[in-house]
Image 1 (cartoon, rainbow, N blue to C red):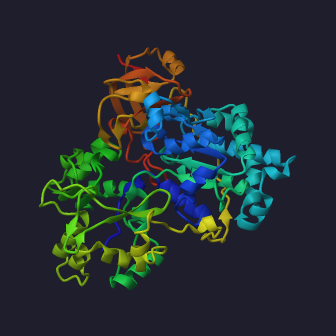
Image 2: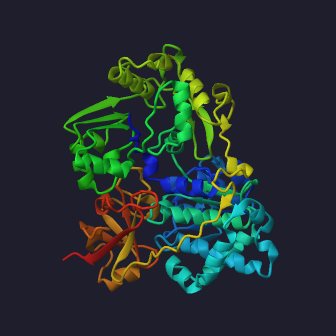
Image 3: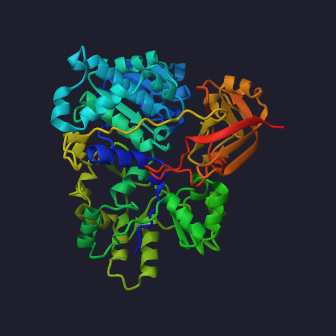
Length: 579
């Protein structure tokens, strides 16, 4: 009877989904890997490719080799934004031969991506006054609304303000704009460095604005491409894991499954933590992940979890969430996706969706660690039957053969017709993206330009904008070592990266201990003491450090009013030498 479904999208790409849905009528990117192979220009924003999306390195090196322009936009110039050795190229591996992965690196200030994008749009529109081919007028007139308002907004935004907010010179912005207008087909790709800000939705809308100006949608080698990572981030929303489900989905679910699903919106991650703290949420069930370490405001979140009557973790390995728990707690070990899943109907396969909307089967090949381990679907089914003994839903029948689950999905989910046959094709199948076919499921029936106010991201005097991130020896909250290989850090995680001039201004030298004070939206403060300052090539006014250790600095009230995402990439801090 509830849509309380906090999920990883609440933390990562909620802004992307809301922005793309508003602009194009779809919450997903429109490009696939073939587009990456055909594009003339790639713009990569807010992602550390080497550790966050290592498979992208192959596409970047191949793009560079065939002469495509590759522009990286990030406060740091990361290792993956310069060159890479491709792991499956045996000759390159044997000879340590690296291929370049960029033609331009722009070190935008933390949160300054929106100003850069608007500056590029302003440059494109200025160029169009003398070069009509700089914009695709036919595409704009036929397929979009809101263009004139957006053009007026760009013209009214002074270059000085765009430079101040982006942290880049006008010359650098024009250089990026020239690459964009010289390219016949462009892809813009982004990750959490764009979304985990107060203005994350506006920034993704600005990405779409820029793409629309030159008709970079609905054709090969062009379009928006969010980097969504592991398979449940995008697939769960496709299958209805959404605290704000669409009425159309609920109607179909009710009709096919003969249930009466709740219509009220449920709680997302931030709302769940607040409700736990109030005592309104008494039971928390976690499917995978490491909720306690992934969420912000660690002390508050720990107390919220401990305030629950019961917490349940369905997991393949132990993590911090198993020891930060409710008054009663269960750990339910489950099969990993790499394990053979034997059910009454034989060895089962699960279906997954990647960030390119490709759906394929995943079949485990390893012998399970124990014959007593259950699969995640079997655990859900067992819980359902135990909690709802009179339920007419055939829970046990579904688990005997997962094809039966997929048959039901094919009736409920648009684009999943003939699911079991199509998912067994050699590469699976791609879910249709209407916007790719220039079908826009928006209120206007067209792609919609956004005319949002430019965000003010320049820190107040004496303050820095700190972004949390992962080291290269880390995956999500799992830390494999205290090293950060590509950034030259060994045996250290309690650190803060700073601009050298910012350090000098504060009387801080390399490896000096510092005190970090974060100021939340409600005026409260959070502290980290004794962290070591590391000088790094980054814009003035910016700082960075590792999550999950720095999650303690992010107040639960510090979330975007546009997406409800925690502001993991824009924490307002004072940093002083430790006394």
